[in-house]
Image (tube, rainbow, N blue to C red):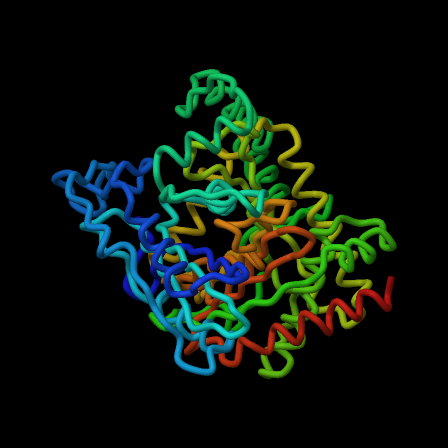
Amino acid sequence: MYLESPESPMHVAGLNLFEFPARVHQRKFMSRIDEAYRSTTDLRKPFAHCVAHGTLGRFGPLYWQHDPDIDLDYHVQRSALPKPGRYRELFSLVSRLHSSLLDRSRPLWEAHLIEGLQNRQFAVYTKLHHATIDGVAGSRLTEASCSTNPKAITDLSPLSVEAHEKFKAQQGPAPDTDLVPSEFELRAMAEFFKEQFDTTTHFLGVIKNYAATWLGLGDGLAVPWRHVPHTLLNTEVSASRRFVAQSWSIDRIHAVSKAAGVTINDIVLAMCSGALRRYLEEQGELPEHSLRALVPISVREKYDFDSPLAISYIIADLGTRHEDPADRLEAIVESTRAGKKMLGGLTSREASLYATLMQTPLFVASMMGVADWFPPVSTVISNIPGPKDQLYWNGAPLLGSYPVSAVFHGFALNITFVSYHGSLDFGIIACRRTVPRVQRLIDYLEQSLAELENAA
């Protein structure tokens, strides 16, 4: 919330693409979805809550306050694409919707029901503030609103308490947990930092250990700021956005990862590396040092359905200074293994606390307006695990689930992908003004994957 500005809205969104069931009246079907969203004001927290603050204003403590007069006519809106209703027109609409701030005097979400697509398709764009949700929680929101049974019928609002509790019950009994960190967990974090920085030694020893940890000396660990080049990706952003999306087969990517002996996530990072290298070469901006990507990692426990955020992160060296795709992949694997090793000794709660503490300098750099001068990382690349089964909403198959993330000052490009039913659904969002022709990244991702297939 503190990081947000008119040029840097801190909301995220999901674009779900559906196909109308056979032999239905399309306009009546869209009205049914509309009615479901408006069917109740008993919404799960915080979707019936707005942000309140005390005497210090927006920079003081913030908390949720229930809105007794939520206006669903404002939050749920219908749109129709101009003909011919291609994905181009859909992405243009999403780009415009994603450019504007959410109204802080209201609960921080909007749902846009979009009709007029070709091939008997429609879309639902759901926009929520990042303070209310993370990627995995967003994926579960989609899963809770749909069914694996094509004949299942529901009129529940996807944001309702009833739909949320029904989904939780389907996952089985959950152990009791307290979302507030315990004193034991905080002490564990203190011990972790003590081991990292050896705070019991002489001050010179502290400085040496700090340098060893955060200047990337040994083990291939990539860290903020060290050798992070300045490119057009690290500039002040305007309020305008450009969104594009595409899907790739998981089987195709898995075949490359199996042949190379690495993870699927490493191959996707290598796809992004090759695409970004081509893009920056085309713009005459390829730097001497390799790009570094902040890679959020979900630390959400299996039965945690209520935490809005449960994220830690590692930093990946994308190896973009290497022309050979195999060399780029090697650099990526070395850095991701080192990052995962660093987090390996922490519980999921401790890893989440660690992320909160260590991301502070990144956010402060953006708030102070220096992230475009001294970028801590080059970009953000996120992987969201989604449903493995085909999903339906009242018989309408979900064709794809595309994430629409946030960009802000110093970080003008974000690549996020969701795994769903045998595909990886990529959503790319960028500042329209500072990152021109971002749609070419879709072609470059395909070319980069073909390179990796040949190398493997």
